[in-house]
Image (tube, rainbow, N blue to C red):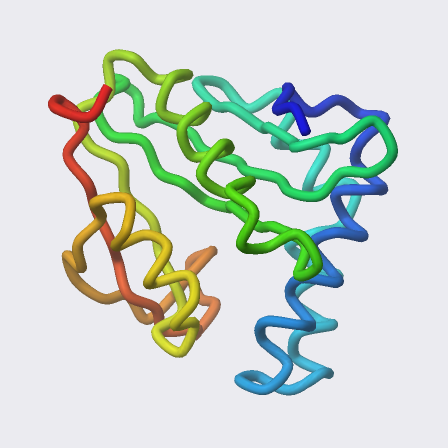
Amino acid sequence: MFVRTASERDLAAVRELLVETWHATYDHIYGVERVTAITNDWHSIASLGSRLTKPHSEFLVADDGKEISAMAFAAADSDGKVVKLYQLYVRPGFQGRGIGGMLLDEILDCFPDAEMIRLEVEEANDRAIAFYKAYGFAEAGRTGHCGVAGSGIPALVFERPLGAWH
């Protein structure tokens, strides 16, 4: 398994990964219809493609040469001090193998001047919360609009200072 920068040729596979992972993770929380609507919007080829050219960002995939098993997307604020991890998803069949940690480590390496990394996580996603806590993240607040403004999806906000970590 190796981590590399995503390209346009990866977008269909990344979308498939996200749809599979979102349904496996969130159907029991939001219902199939809402998860389908969210993935059709947030994980469309056009939406994913726009991330490839976003300034001060990194879009990574974990690839074994046959399939993409995980992805991550993060972007720094204008001064590069705070990085927001927007996405880190590992296909259900590949979870628990260290792939998420590989992606997170690579994301951190991509932003050497950052002082803080921040993310939002669904509070019912116990597995993700345990993963982030194991990597030194701590709960720093809540949002009523996870992902995008107006989403109406509540989430926990987690942060981790970076100075001592990389």
